[in-house]
Length: 316
Image 1 (cartoon, helix red, strand yellow):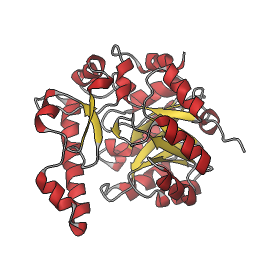
Image 2 (cartoon, helix red, strand yellow):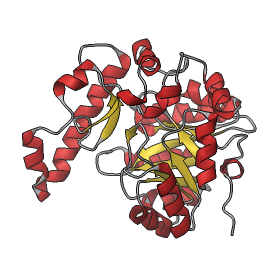
Image 3 (tube, rainbow, N blue to C red):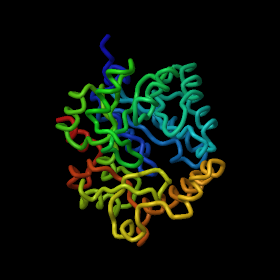
Image 4 (cartoon, helix red, strand yellow):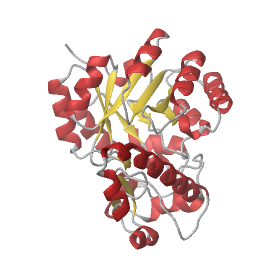
């Protein structure tokens, strides 16, 4: 049985989701994405309060056009203490889809499906893909080894093909798309669509500093490295002088604490919180302590442009 195309699932013109990016994504970007014929997604954690989250949903619903779609990303593990309340707001207000990350999506799938919301789940390997398939996910977001931020360890081609062969769910590829040729390659491997993040950091509408945007123009794929210093989990960032100075590995104390089963989850939660605060500061203002999250697809970013022009570059 042929798997549905992302364009059909979300009612969009092009098979692209503007990926949810912590502190980068905002309603301006998603509105421009929808106007350009793709879907947009925002991390629920970008909003400090539930009222702000609710207001953003109302704004996107009012701005939605035919050929566009919008959704929100939920962190569904214990590091997100707001998870259940955020899920309730998304279900009460109504969104097109929810994209889950970093934990079991079981509760999200149950609640979202009650109100007709589709659930796409981040996966990095077959074992987790099989779990979310069993829970009733609508699609897999295959996070490969070219993704920005928290990435997987498997190449796009291998991951897409394995998930297609061994699960019944449609596969959305995440990572390694910064041009139409790369989009076409992912579709050729068997993906029904792609989730694209890093190229949109350098958009006029992105809510980050001009220096962060310019870094995505000035640096390229060879300047992306992995660090464990942000959240305790390997994360791809731009290799700035500050990143070089502090190193990319966990401290000796973190390594010791992470070996203690009873302390491990608390260490990760603290590291996640500290790392997110550092990333927030870097996104909004420039200091010598600059950590900019991005993936190798910034190789194709040559200038700061409107979202609509970035979509054109990816589709024409």
